[in-house]
Image (cartoon, rainbow, N blue to C red; front, side):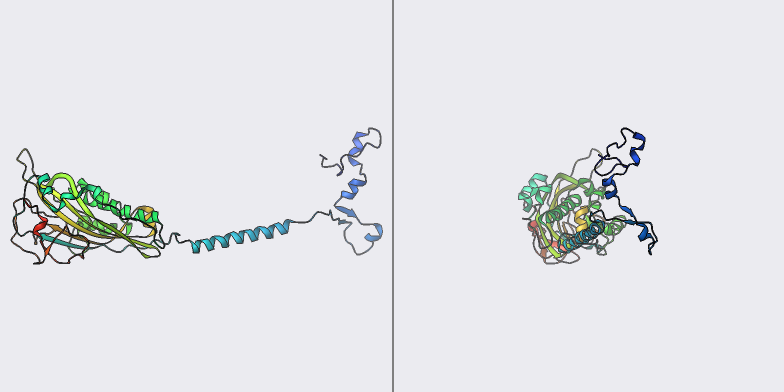
Length: 359
């Protein structure tokens, strides 16, 4: 490879027979031809030229400007393609939309006679919940498929979040006993946390701030679970309600075996069944799906046996074995085991006798 001071064809042969110290200043014909600058002749210097030398073309194309233009074109093409694909892609994440306040309806169901009592297994066997599954196994998914703007995996994610909320708010023992609300709270859209916290701290039956609309909770000083195996049956449905909105509706009946709360070594009272019918409407935008959280739109709770005059906003107040109430609800009886029907919005209903165990 030629050095910085060598001509293009390589070092010139020694013309003087070994005078190495002068070799670097010897310019042969090839070196002169390769030079980029050329001195003007004496006649040329007498003209209008102000410089003593002129540039010589090396015969190599100047491609710098051409490469710069090509690079700019490639960047513009890539940018345009990204914009086009972004517009065409149905799964692009939009801006997060603010959640609406939850709307709550609570309907106590008053019994027509005394509440039946007995052993939990016997009560379940003689009730409409006899064939129900236990716990989360009773919350089953429908056949899931993609919608126009949501993939199948996104639909499954929405159904999973809805099921997780039902489990956290209806089946978690510490939630039922009023020990904690954290499992349900973790699944809520941040925009609804203030409403949820206010409902927990100061429950009101105002259609907005009843904790019983968010979760199932009993007063641990009055009742306790007689059997941890809660019976569950119901349905989930999903629908796309906009290009960026997916909704899930849940309609489930939860049957609890309860007994009076006891302290010390006293006798344990008979168990009785308490039925809660929950219809909940969930909404999900793409950010909710990504963050595994839900926005609750409506919650309708029909539960009995309860007294019509009882304040159920802070916790449900079951009538236990042998108890009865003199106050009657709506003459039209309500069966909490009947799913897939419009919820009855009334102050109090009458518990269908068929919903009680037939002992």
